[in-house]
Length: 388
Image 1 (cartoon, rainbow, N blue to C red):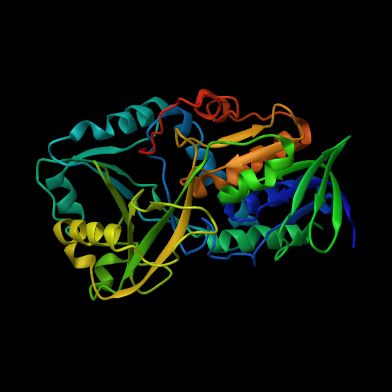
Image 2: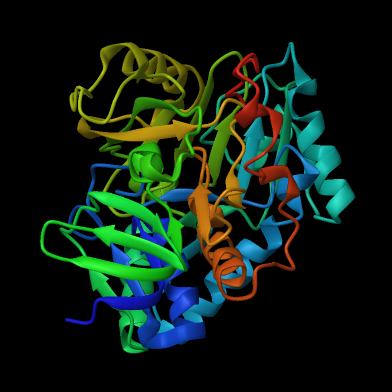
């Protein structure tokens, strides 16, 4: 087996597989990817059928990138013939007593020239009668929102990368990443590899992988969950009739139309417990489940049915819940990608950015807000803020 490469990617979830895809477009058989589990596994953040994709975001740093998410996923779809993005429209809901919760979203979209509609609850119920809302509440609607299938995205991008000569090693945990003159040595159970440039997209395992580089990030890991409900009202909740939705408030909920399973899917954002990767419960948590069901009973009662299953996943977040997309200051040939538990939709453009940083040392995308040297990552007194 070839053991010397120009480029390596460690961690091949939806972000890592995107980096492999774009690197393979640039460097073919000089690319190797490492994944500790089988591709598409459910032990991290990328398992399952769907993640929200949207142009609606809370700050200009994100709306500067959101159009490129669709463009880059479109390139993968065009090359592969596999549909990865389903557009169904999307709504940002606010409680009637706090309509300003989405002011930043509206301002960021206006600044980026992204069209949207500013509705009342009454407007929303006329368009989507599946909702039960206060008629006076505020709702933003953006028609390009929808869902991304991360499981298909991982396998599609890896298949295309392999077609260009890239090597993909799953079930291959990286035990050590050792800086050496001119690059890195990567140690696995089976072999050792030398690479010139490495991209670390290991999410909850990021600090473990970076240990010998001297870089460590203040990352919080929580165990979250989504529940699939076998609604009897299937036709009403298909993607051509029902949008993705995010409900902003003291607690934020989100959900999907029927896709991947014969069921709706919904969850509570940041509703789980703080864990370590080796101490997570792997069991449904009744606290966020009860809060979710209470919200659905009040707001989207027709979406509920028997529980098909509840699936857990890991959220890994910097203190400001912004991405990390940067080269390590001490090791500029090491690139760190961290999606902050909302990065799946951006994965393809993040992978493209990583390939540019790896092959040319710079990128033409605006990523200064996601620097590895920002105060949220370097100031121990920075107060955690995970709501977005």
